[in-house]
Amino acid sequence: MAKHGCVAVYPGSFDPLTNGHVSLVKRALNIYDSVIVSVARNSQKKPLFTVQERVEMAAEVFADEPAVMVESFEGLLVDYVKRRKTNVILRGLRAVSDFEYEFQMALMNRKLERTVETVFLMTDFRWLYISSTIIKEAARLGGDVTELVPALVVERLQEKYGVVPLPKTS
Ligand code: PNS
Image (cartoon, rainbow, N blue to C red; front, side, top):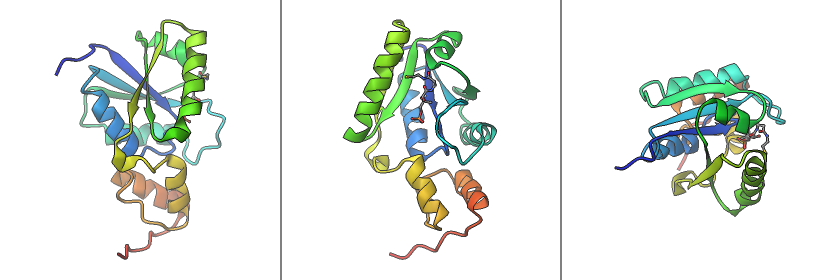
């Protein structure tokens, strides 16, 4: 498959990484030579996991994928993207609800730096309804999220919340 031939920066909070994020990175690798999963340090949100924990979890998940690098960044995203010698910001789009926020962010980033482009990939339909926020809510209350996040994230969530997930009933 022909590739765009450059590096895509995939920024986010990743608090924590979900199967939706993992799927997006894997699909992006069909287009780009490499993807940098970039955990934002100065997010406005109050995170459950520290930046270091989030970077470690993502690095472990992508340990077998040499084309994926994981790191954190601080400050303006567009400045960081330029420091990484690329011009591509990768973001996932789920439903209509994401659009307004993503559109605003993409336009602001373009205003700040015209050479940087935001590229959106539609989330695979299997992960359309999940977000880090809803995963944390379910896990906090003992819900089973094993099919929605990587196995090591399930363990970390259990450690954080100190709850054992309920066995699945169908
Ligand atoms: O996963 P999230 O929380 O939706 O990711 C948001 C993120 C980290 C991509 C965004 O908040 C960001 O880019 N922060 C860095 C600071 C910055 O550049 N802000 C201006 C962008 S409009």
